[in-house]
Image 1 (cartoon, rainbow, N blue to C red):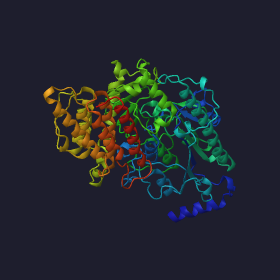
Image 2 (cartoon, rainbow, N blue to C red; image 1 turned 90 degrees about the vertical axis):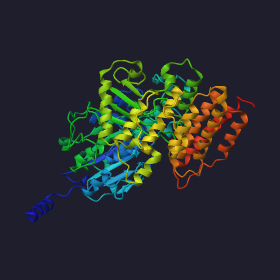
Image 3 (cartoon, helix red, strand yellow; image 1 turned 180 degrees about the vertical axis):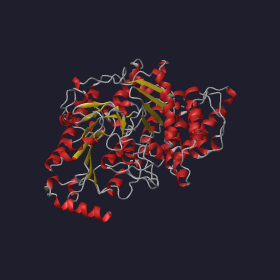
Image 4 (tube, rainbow, N blue to C red; image 1 turned 90 degrees about the horizontal axis):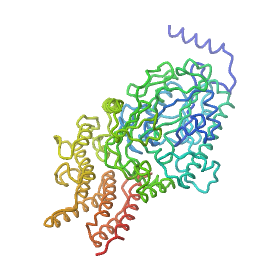
Length: 636
């Protein structure tokens, strides 16, 4: 029987007239083209933005459909792209920290591997930026020369083109002659109206126009090759705009991206429900779904462990009720946030409730808007709440925003105490998602490699409960603590958090009793304790502070073998100097001694390369600036 089928197929192939070279492709499988553009949210004409000049994407949207709410699952490129390429939530892989640089877990495949096994020619033009080591055989070609034109005759292709001209770094590139009028832009209400901010936004839109033209060049090549009728096209940003309070913000403006899909007539049977030229589809979709959707279009089964739900093709799945997102470490700053939306409300769970949302990420502060906004908010304490809160107000354990009435996410309904029935259902759905997806973010990054090597990097309810229950415990009540180093970490973490806001410890434990990261957290917690003590305890308190500062300086040094403990210690020192500036506990001689130790400290670390080389030097530079500021106000 098999021989008969083979012979029949061979006869059909030989009796079919040969196609011209420009249109050769597998007649039973579509080509698939991804047009990805960096750091760009729905600031496009086709999404109703009159300030945008994006004729190519507008025309593409007129031929196909747009999705109203597509989330990148993470507000930064490496984590979003890790989700894209695996079809899995990065939190389930422990790869949600920006540039985690992890080995790919056993049994996890990047979805182009499955396409290649099915006969597709898979190419990626330029950027990868995954948080996992790329498995061998992911792409046929990846780099500047990667192109569908390199495939074998008649071979279907999956091609990715990443347009980088709209990246955050290009917003601040000077000189630049503006094409968009800065005064014509409608500033979001969380920005002060400053010339630097208007200029950056105008340049952001200029770069969007350049990006649009680059996409047009790729689409022109598709037309030149006569492949439009055989190719399904996706066009999307890789997360929100590169401007502050977009990129790195875990809410809607950081994760919402445009998604345009064009399906040629011959492949309309694979199109999503409601497909009509120019239509705006309300189905909730996310990056985790894109890989499984491509596999569905190609007729290839997804791996069992993939979390995404296809929204096109024969494997089209049920519509989602919620979208899920996450934020982990952003460059040198740790910050765990989990997010969920039903399309109207956005609910954020902040594992650290006492920090403001705006972290001092050095790379972001290169953008003039970031510096101008921060300095304005610092120097104008009477500025509107929405302008100051991002940088200077503790955010609380949860945030709830109503996108229908507050698209800029500035009115926190949870903070206002408003009774919104959706909040409880969203919170419950988020916790279920964390458990269902086996979120590994409850293993701190400085302990992750160790637990991974020991085969223990698995989701455990005890770790999740420690993060959640301890974080929600009143300062005077302590749940039972188990003999588990990760639970101890969350104990210390929340001790740090509560000391920052209440000035009292949650647990009275010795700093040196635990592993280094936990000791660092406990030390900075004690630095936050009240500095006003009875006269007979002043010397003891000062000695305790010296001990804590010495511990932080020791772990920040090169002798500490765990890089992420070092990074944690540098962040703690940055916070400790802020506390000292407000209290003036030490005399000038002591502070100069600490400063000199910091100045002499090496920021190198064995076997580090790439962006990781920059994180500790950035923290050191900032810390030395803070020391100079502290020293300028005191004399022995």
